[in-house]
Length: 114
Image (cartoon, rainbow, N blue to C red; front, top):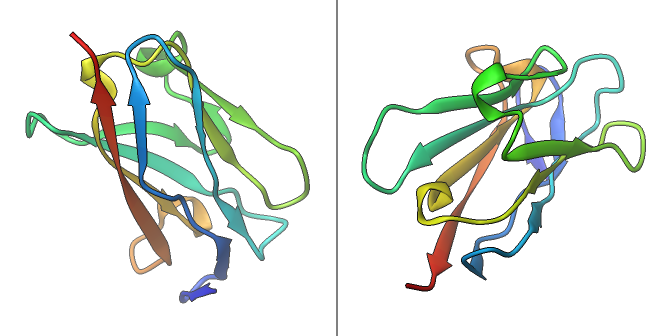
């Protein structure tokens, strides 16, 4: 369990190795049923961090590549469609909708192929 100021992450994402074109899931769950998590991506090329999901909304820049799977209360799994080299990097799930000081967990995603 990952304990934070605003709640606790009960499931954090695991590092993943995937192939170009594959779909994969990154798990994240919080003990708070009222406040959603936020998802962020730090690309491996050191581009700026991208906010993928915040305030229960997938950001417009991310709609074609990502989705959120809500299989149970407090669960916000990130679904990544059609992996490309651009999705490689560090993904962070943050409790309490990403409020500063909230609990978070991160994983590394490696994309293999051409």
